[in-house]
Length: 196
Image 1 (cartoon, rainbow, N blue to C red):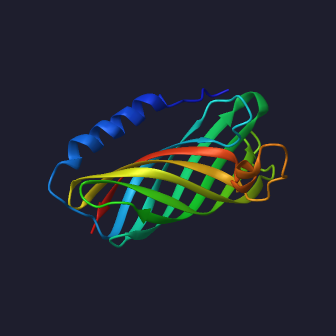
Image 2: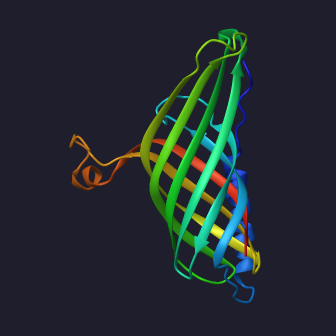
């Protein structure tokens, strides 16, 4: 079985905060317009299962105004399971509404929207065997930080809750807990965007 890579999340978080602090005091600059970039994502499809996050490689397109924006992202992870004679390819596609909470060279943002999560399973040694493809729909929401080292380049990192559940069962968690959505998965992303 192929090994699974994990991100030292503590180091990524400290790096983002340090860069944000260094650049926050620089003269104001804001990226607006159309942006195209790449990213890495660390995805945990089920937070109740004790497994490591999987690393995905992908990209995003961003369309930003001064305070709001839209992001469309596509990531991909492929893994060969030789003992099971299977290859699993996962491709999440997310559309997010971005709400910028500041201006300048470093600013936090909130995001949320729909996602389509496609998984294809195919045989390794028998290409004539039919592949099985499933697609799940789920809402996601999160928060992040974008840093602008120049007017046309943004470096961003965020944390997303995936497969949000807005139909709480009411249980014994208390009134406020019942109002908040639950979630099944989570996702860290770290990327860079060039704005035109």
